[in-house]
Image (tube, rainbow, N blue to C red; front, top):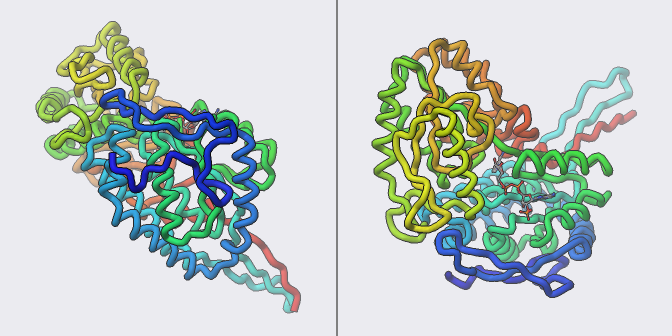
Amino acid sequence: MTALLINRKNYFAGAWQTSDSGRTFGVLNPATGGLIGEVPDCSEAETNRAIRSAQLALPAWRAMAADERSRKLKKFNQLIIENRKELSQILTTEQGKPLAEAEREILYAASFVEWFAEEARRVYGRTVPGPTPERRIIVTKQALGVCAAITPWNFPCAMITRKLAAALAAGCTMIVKPAPETPFSALALAELALRAEIPPSVFQVITGDAEKIASALMSSTSVRKLSFTGSTEVGKILIRQSAQTVKRLTVELGGNAPFIVFEDADIGKAVKGAMFAKYRNAGQTCVCVNRFIVHESRVEEFAAGLCSASSALKVGNGLDSGVEVGPLISIEAADKVRALIEDALSNGAKRLSGENISAIGPCFIHPTILSGVNKSMRLWNEEIFGPLCAISSFKTEEQALELANDTEYGLASYFYTKDLSRAFRVAEALESGCVAVNDTVFAFPQGPFGGMKQSGYGKEGGQEGIEEYLTTKYVMMAV
Ligand code: NAP
């Protein structure tokens, strides 16, 4: 692994530091099982120092001209792009996704920094005619204050920058606790932010005990907001904890995305879209398709197309050339997918292709396609998070919608049709925060990404993204 951006210390309270106890934890390469390195195992005390530091750094950062903050973010964006090769190496080594995909994530991560650098200059208020001649109502937007982020391992860079860049653009300071599987990407971003002359303590990174770090963040009255991306289970804990200080939250949680193929769909395009929406990051994204719901008249054709395209995918170590599907993040994650396959098979699903056990290593699962899937199976209700396609069928549009919305989640949905009226009708009826029609890509900073139902609340990206880090002040001015 390249060394320039590899940091084995945390960046907080103005310096690169170890944990108070000197304890560390190891980070493994999921493709080989080998140890990449150790990072500090921090806890409440270090987090509290980071919070104090973020509080001290806040006034100058918040008061800085938006143009100046924007310039620093643009420099940060430029440095991420310039260092994309090294960042991709770090990302693939700790996360497993193929190198080309890692590089796309780095560019995606940078795109949020660029977007919010621009948004920093467009934080508009308004004046409203007063109710009496001497009164003026002024509406202003102000930075919320010290913010925190807790992020998952599946997008080690992009899940950070889409929170961080919005917070910094708004004039907030931010402390990030990255996932323990992928801390080196977060620490590399901290190094690049410093090189971009973003002042010390405006962006800090703490690795270590999630519950203890979260406890310090959630009980602090100085931390005004937490943005969390991760499982619904942990999201619910944090929602409860936020009540103690009435903290603002953005919670991007789990998904269970349906992918509907209507009878009038272009099957070639639907298969191409499915390949991206299913196998990106080996199926480990919150917007990956969980359930394919295909019209009974086209299900065989769609399944055949998917089988043929899936069997051509190259599975292996993400650092090897041409690999398209890397390992899952851990043996436990791979075992969970294997258990979902077994459960579906024992409840009547049919395996069309794929193998559970890979000769490459215990974290690998070959693209697997099951047909005849139904509601009785675990994979109908649980997030698969692996390269497993689960196909069911339907007769009517009404039935397709009922099946698609039959989940507690509401993050992403996809459907393919050539009927314009149906496109509007179904897009409006699907219970999810993001809907793609004849497409499967949401990864753009321009769009307000986020869920409904138990996939969470709050938006990241788009015009809405910066609002999450701003508070609206109403000034009644008598003249
Ligand atoms: P996770 O177990 O919820 O972990 C996410 C983060 O929360 C990690 O940093 C984790 O640290 C931390 N954490 C765990 N327990 C905590 C606690 N009690 N208090 C505070 N923090 C705690 O989720 P994951 O398995 O890493 O990530 C996969 C999940 O993220 C999936 O459900 C996926 O759908 C979701 N996701 C959602 C989006 C979205 O935008 N909606 C995007 C990507 C992923 P430790 O591991 O150290 O405990």
